[in-house]
Length: 202
Image 1 (cartoon, helix red, strand yellow):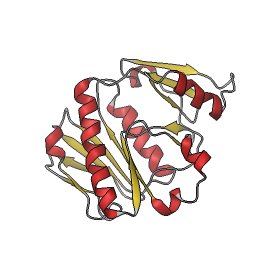
Image 2 (cartoon, one colour):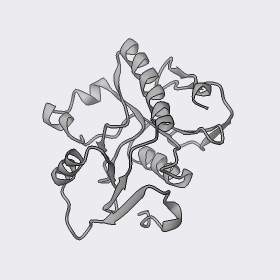
Image 3 (tube, rainbow, N blue to C red):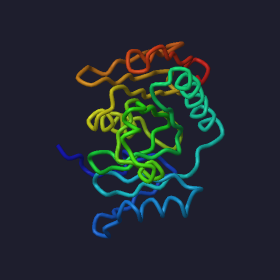
Image 4 (cartoon, rainbow, N blue to C red):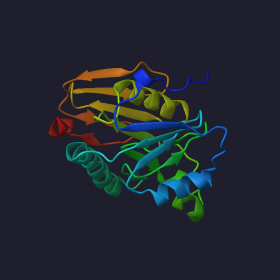
């Protein structure tokens, strides 16, 4: 079922949403737009809404970095996939172009892509995607994004709310698991052996 366009109430401050459906913005044009405005963070929804966001504040950026760094350290030791930070963009099967705060893709899936595809917003959904609530987004927005990741092929998703010290764990075909004030989160079995000390970013 197609999602309705975002309403004003669902949007956090520091965001501008433009409808570009009738403009016919291509993937290459969107990539160039992002490249030409690298001080901004942009996404394109499946409904062809261009979302423009300001950079994160220092604390939110630190939280993103902590998760991406720990995921990268684990991924380098594990060797079965590659971790990415918040600047990575994915073109999902539904046409949306999204950038999770942290993500991981199996190496065998990445190897099926060309170098040219990897240099841009490759047509692939991450196996794991994580979003962290910040002042520039709402919990409703991020819940919709996690559901979108799973609907497009993700096998595990984390939505971390440092303000309410909660974590929502998303898995295909299962009810969303709510963790209240957890000290750690396990990525098993998708991220075998990865445990993130989430209490460090509360």
